[in-house]
Image 1: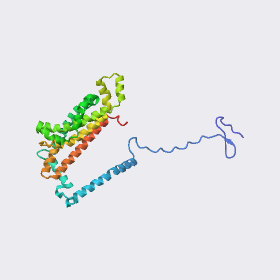
Image 2: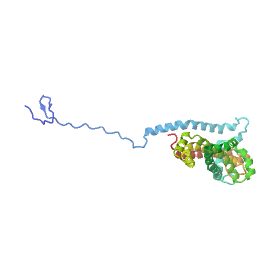
Image 3: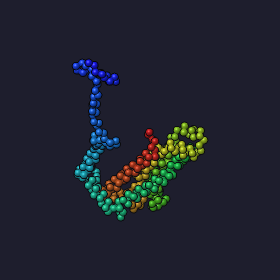
Image 4: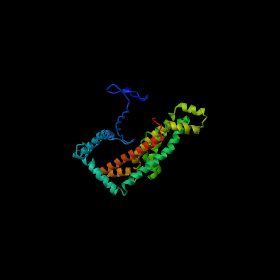
Length: 309
């Protein structure tokens, strides 16, 4: 006996061999989706991998630093350094005690922050004056070959002269006031900024100048719209170098009868053999210098974001 079926449904055979109406079967349940972490939030595995990578970078230099401190603290005082008295080498614990004393009581009638601020302000004044004069003059001398032929040999002769050589001359010229200290920093930074700007301008491809002439740009427009953007990376390198040198020269500038500043602190403490305080002053110069360099890098990456892309 044949059972009528829906023509749209294909007949299937039952176990006895008789056709029967196809019955819809229930769909197989889908496996539950594995929950994913929210976007932008690291997983536990990534945290562990990051910590392992950070430890691999930090632990080796940190272990060397700790080893040096242990040797300095326990072995150097035993007199293992020939030719130097052990009490003149100090100890890490003595440096820590000197830093705490300087932080609480200051030195020479001024707080420790006053010494740092005085050195930073002198460095900033000399550097900014050098940048404001050196960059425009360097662009002009780099662009105008005739003017550069007259003046650049003189600046090239002055650049290798160390800052200490200018100190007696500056004292004779300007006395022992604040301007003399700033001028020593200015002279050092100005020469590097000037010659670095000249190198940046002269590294601009010749095709850029031909393109400016095709568009009939004026000299000022060529300098501002063509030369300056192309030379800016090299100019920033010279500015960064000049800033590092300015911060290094602040110690030499504060030899000119200074009463406050890190250079004054180091010189005065060395005269009474307070070696631990000298170490504190040197460490502060290094820490502030690293901070200044980091700020410069941030500014450079923000302004020159297209470099390296």
